[in-house]
Image (cartoon, rainbow, N blue to C red; front, top):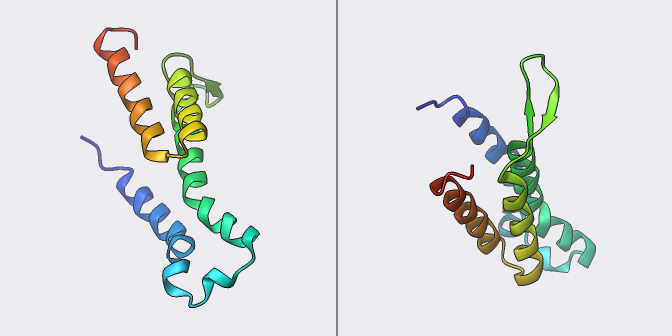
Length: 110
């Protein structure tokens, strides 16, 4: 088990915390323009999507070049995006993608 990325996770949490905590800390945030509220509401999912995309569809080979991965990651990401767009539920999309990857690995497809 490796704990190399724990520091990075803590750093990412610290960096994104202010935008997530702003509604709790700033009085009168509901009076912001709708565009600003929409931006603040989508910061968390956007960061999560960026992390998921770079960790599931891109990798670095031995020569240091970025390569696109093939396999179950693409269908899992597509399923998550479709479910989130259809049901407006991020948790449902993530869980469905995890289940798809787990099933594919269980039957030997991934």
